[in-house]
Image (cartoon, rainbow, N blue to C red; front, side, top):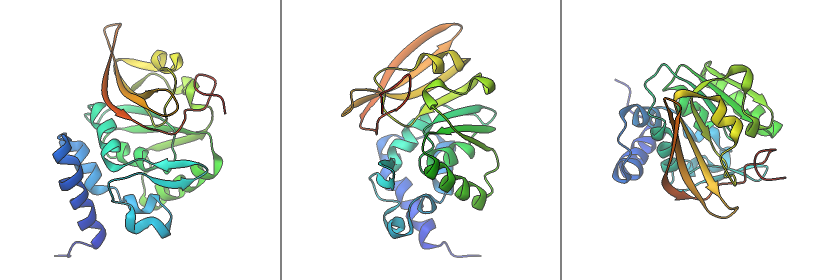
Length: 217
């Protein structure tokens, strides 16, 4: 029997100390967080800090979110395994990687070429072949592949972009930080039988959602 690596131990500690005590209880989410090697999604110089209880810079003015926030947003989608999920803001690729372990296919959009190129290399290295990516304005969604069972937005905008609501399946769930450029409410929008409901999950701080339906660059 192979002994766990230091990375395996760090992932388990992250789950046991950061996620479960804060209310992350969905088994699929916990399993994905235990599985995906977060340290591969940051620069080598920061790998030792990858499982800490904080975000980390990834270049181009962007960050990889704190593990708890990734888990919280993932859990809010209530995935069962058959879904098609749209992610706005690929960034490091870590959130998409976590989602890919929990659903049928992930579509992820990034506006910064360098970030997507790096993320794709990690996806290929890990053989996460159910992640489809493109460079575009994520606030407009991905209409050619809609509808999506779940949508997650990893940047904070002034409002929920209307195209994303339109591209959400019924039933479907959309998770997004909404607020000003300094503090946002992490909101869960649910579409059920044509009715829309929105509730606040947590207060968060994300980088700006840039695009025609977000903040200007």
